[in-house]
Each structure stands twice: as C-alpha cells, then as structure tokens.
Image (cartoon, rainbow over all chains, first blue to last red; front, top):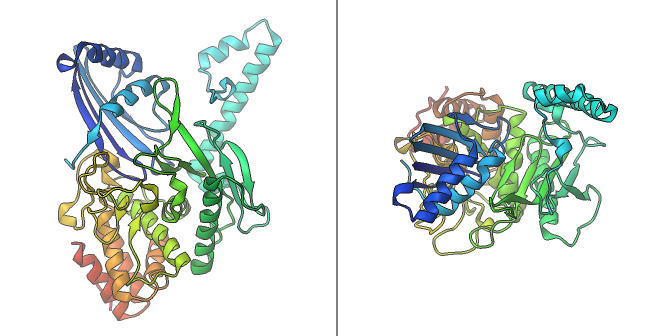
Length: 100
Length: 357
C-alpha cells in the first residue's frame, strides 16, 4: 500500500507532506498505516471542502493498494471522524514540502 | 473533557424513519423534533449561501459589538461566552487580545472607510479562543491555526514549539475579519487566482489595521504578517512578507521555505492549497506594497482606499489582471500620478494594467 499526503492552507499556508509505502516501513508501522487506512472509510475519490470557511487547513490523501486507488481532499471541518486518526498519523510523518 | 453532543449530530434519514415508527412516544417525539431541526438547519444553510447577511447576528445598538468565547479545551464553536461588549479586561490574555484586536479592526474600518462592521450593518464580531483539535489518539491538542468559519473567527493557542497563540497578532485578527468583510462584498471564489486575491485583500487590510493602530507610515512600516504567532527562531520572521514574498521563513525545520512568488512568472500552478491561494497572494501583496511606498504617507489613506474600493467592485471570480485593471481605474479617480504608481506596481510583479486617461 502506498499513501501520499499533502497538508496545505491554514492562515500560515505552509505545505507539509509525506509518501509512505507499507512495503518499506518497519512492520509495526506498516500494520498501523494499513489499519488506519482501512478504518478511515475512504473508499471513493472526491474533494470535500467547506464553502464559506477561510484559512482552514487542507488534507490531500492518495491511497494506492490492491483494492485500487482513492484520492480525496478534505479540510479541517469536512474531515470525517473516522479519517482523523489516519490524518494525525500522516501529519506526524509529514515534512516541509517545496512547491511542485 | 470535550465530548460530542449526540443531539447535535445529523441522524441518517433511515434511522429517523425507524424511530418515527417506535412504540415509545418519547422516541417518536425526538425523531419528529430531529426532522424539524434538520429541516431548519438545511433552510438556514441555504439562506446563508444565498445571502450571508441573513446569518449575521446584528449588534443590539447597531455599532461596535464584540463577543469572545472560550472553547474550553473543546473543538466546538462558539464555546462559553467569557467577555461581551462593555465588559472590562479579564485575566486571560487570549480573551483580551481577541476582544481588543477585533475592536481595533472594527475602529479601522469605521474610521477609514466608514464601514459599520463586516457586513456594513453592525454585525456582531464573534471570536472563540483556545480552540483545540483531536490528535487522533483520543486527546485534544491546541490548534495551530486561526480561521474564519463563515460566521465567526476562531483562534488556537499553537503548539508552543513553532506557534504561539494566534490572538497575539493584530494583523492576523485583521486578516480573519477581512475574510468576513469579503464574504459580504466581492466574495471572491476561494480557489486559483480569485482565491489568491481573497487572501491578498485579507493580508492588505490585516496589515493596514496594524499600521493604522500604530501610526506606521508606509516608508517605515514593516510588511510582515503574523510575526507574533511564531516562536522566535533564526529560520522564521513571520508567516508572510508582503514586501519580499518568499522570504518570511527559510529552511525552517517545520515550515520549510516560504513558497510565495513575488512575480507572475513564478505563479504556482499546482492543486494544493486550493490552487495556491496562500502562495500566489505574494504577487498582488508585493504590488500593493510597491504602490503604497510610491504613494507614500499612510498606506491606509490613499493606497488602502484604492484597494478597498477595488475589493468592493471585483466580481466573484476574477484573475490578477482584472484586479490590476480595476485598481488602476479606481486610482485614476485620484489623479494621473496615483494611476501611474499603481500601474507601475502591478507591472513590477508581471501584471499589466492599462492606465486610463
């Protein structure tokens, strides 16, 4: 399983992110990542943003696995409860990103 | 302890339908009440989308009216009311900063542009301090952010390592409140170049509130946004530098390097950040500073007036060149020198704008 994550926005606007591949992670972390993805409920691609809000942080998550590929974007308010532990895990692994 | 109130949850329709058939009268009554509440909420949201002013609580006396809430280590807004208009300072500095800075922003818009609050009609200024967020491990941690949710401001306290409480910065509070002003005026679409302009105007009037409050002249002012929200370190000076975009933080272990371009040729064209709304705002930000320094004196008097009138007239969806042209057109009303200065400022960042005779 491969997971690409980018956090952007917020009033600060800094970009952070990570790319994780469960096949190259230590076994315990790989299991945690796969478990968090399974329990996140992310099954369909889409962009889910709060229209009237400004300066919320945005989270782009792209998951590639044997089950297929899912790409989603949430903000702080639209992020589903079930996906919060995954985003917290990814944020802990994220590092500053340059502009693409 | 922050707990979620199940009454505030939206119950899926199939469950509500099942509850309506319950033998228990109390359960049926709650289901009916939920249907009514959900319908009211949907109607209120639809009204809010159509006309934000319908959502705005108006000040009782029609003038400056502030309410500051404490999230009480919870992630729900607005929280518990801790200071209202007319009440003196409290022991909590975050509450007083949110109150005082909202007051300075109200006074700025009133004194400089004769604007009565965000909606021009005495809207109550609501802010919540000490907002937290779930850490994914069952605990709540201070929020590293400040935002406008469409009805009110919200401020976190920061992690204490990179960020400090966001209420410390007058320009950040002015920035968030200007998002409110925009929601009642141009309401620039929050993506791509129109989104970058939305962020740009929030920075412009955020920094002008501070300069106005401190009496800083354009030629001696500093153009940093949010320096007070960062814990000091040699790798960071602020969250944005309007005069020199791309230099507010450099090789910072957490923030990285400031991604803002200072020229249209370096426009960010990626998808992140709603198409770079906090990134590409560096381009118009620099144009504003160049115009302000050329026109001199107090930036809020002439350049601020040009930008304010432009902000009111912009269409919801527009690009930098349309904003630049409207800026120059607006400046023309103040004379040829003003128009030339504004046109040159936009040209300096790569955005051509015709000077009207």
